[in-house]
Amino acid sequence: MLKKPTRKTMRAKRRRRVRNKISGTAERPRLNVFRSLTNIYAQLVDDDRGVTLVAASTLAPELKGKLDSSKGTAAAEATGRLLAEKAIKAGIKQVVFDRAGYVYHGRVKALAEAARAGGLEF
Image 1 (cartoon, rainbow, N blue to C red):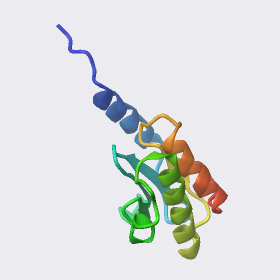
Image 2 (cartoon, rainbow, N blue to C red):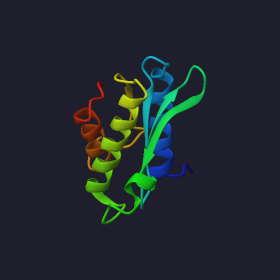
Image 3 (cartoon, rainbow, N blue to C red):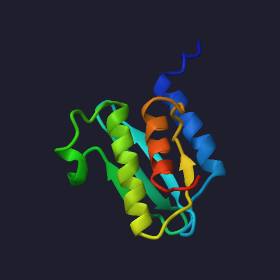
């Protein structure tokens, strides 16, 4: 008898399928998003070299004391703005968005739209 796939295994399957198609370079890195229950993390990755170029999260020192809560769309927006600010300083304007199997809704969407408003193109 087959086991019913869990939400976690289905997300992992979607993530693998997407990662086979997209990849980041030094000129156009991949904006990867990870969403936990309490925090959200984003990083720009150069897959050719296997290096993280820029990273931001709700745990970053720039945001840690300023947020009411590390949960929710407001925290995700602040993280997206911080990531865009750091990327522009590093000379990165264009990225490839990798939602890592998450639905483009809620916190993931808030982070992406804030990064776009901050000057990133994807």
